[in-house]
Length: 166
Image (cartoon, rainbow, N blue to C red; front, side):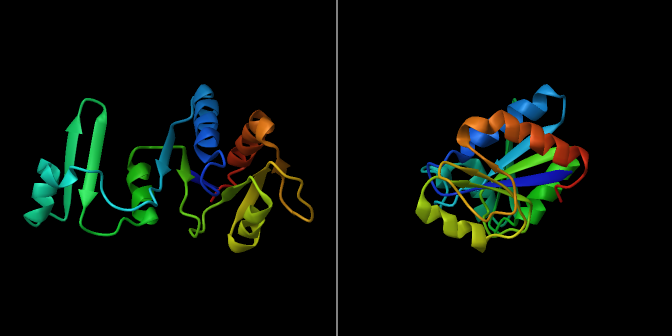
């Protein structure tokens, strides 16, 4: 399974890009998955009253609930991206789009919306491409404009076919 992280600050188009890439790769019959890092902290309101929460409070290391097409797994432990990736591997996923997790070492596409975002380019590892609303100079990776998502998707497909997204 190959992975691509989509990172950037809030309201820069990360979810829109992930949606576009998921639809694009799905159109070509790839098994596609996505995970979003919820960096805003804490479980949803009312979580503590669910059966899942009660199982965890009783001592379960993991507690799950499944209904129709939904499966939720909770734990009292810190979720690690590598563990999450292992779970997706069990599902025979071809490509996993990861929204967030800025500091993880996976291949990244960085979204730049304003000049103050550009410091991200020097802070992240494994930068593969940039989507930028502003002109950028001295960047050694492909740069796409927000209106070029289809072009980015075709470029990413070529990277995938060459097995370069590890």
